[in-house]
Image: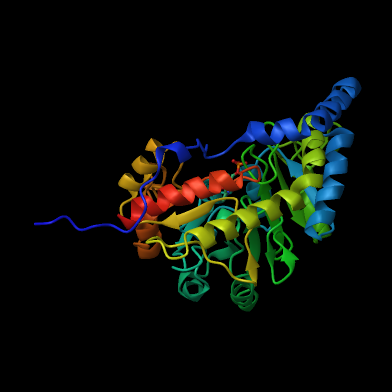
Length: 381
Ligand SMILES: Cc1ncc(COP(=O)(O)O)c(C=O)c1O
């Protein structure tokens, strides 16, 4: 039998360019002088923990998110933990969150002594499906934690409507969505509190660990501020048993420098996403959702493919880095094997098909074209 001819172009070897999944160094060299000077200032002042650089960052980040308060902490996981505690979540409570998320969202619920209750993803947005919320609510439900996964805001109007009807707190997990907007409002400003991670690879990344919670609620802000520093607002006076979740001064300084660049970096990510969309428009893969109400900042550019192992192998052979976010859903993890879970068909299907393509502001057009070319070649064969 004659072999079928394929119309997709092969990848010409002279076009090979290496495209890492992420290039933190490419960004650092651009801002090296600014960052080094800001770090030097902290070193000179010896304000290593919290201090003026962290305070300044808190003020700037609250403004950026369009809220009254920002409480900087050491990680995104701590941010979620403190926000849930401030919302009154405790032992015996249930907290509803997305089945399609990173495990830290559930860990923070577990730290409070509460039980995570998962809701499946919407097949087109990949975020929590609000139509499944009512069925997940019980007498024990205290809060809902929507996750703005991959940088795309969850369907907040629908989620907030259910939360209001049942008097539940909404804590946004915005750890992947710095600067994303939902109907013109920034993530973090859409519920009782919004939690961010500044892990180095995030859209706004520290040079070490970092996190923050933003809120418009004065009492919630004060509660979180107290708990992040051993339950203390005044040195050696401890009102509650708190935590050591303080952000370091050097991270505050780095974040202050990087925050100024964030809008431009997010715009570049959005432009790259548009370019991928153009170049892959008729290829045999599922592209990320693209809608005006929930504007993604593309922390990750996640596509669906039928044969992921082959796709990743093809990409690797042509010098393109890919990752999977996430290959094993939380309810399939050993860590949560003691809880009984229903199945989450959308999340489970996605876990077997998704793959993240290179996405960072410094990507060049030649690199994007190369990624798209290799991707097309793999999926259209
Ligand atoms: C959705 C989500 N939630 C929470 C976290 C936890 O953040 P951190 O690693 O800073 O604790 C992450 C980090 O990757 C995340 O992606």
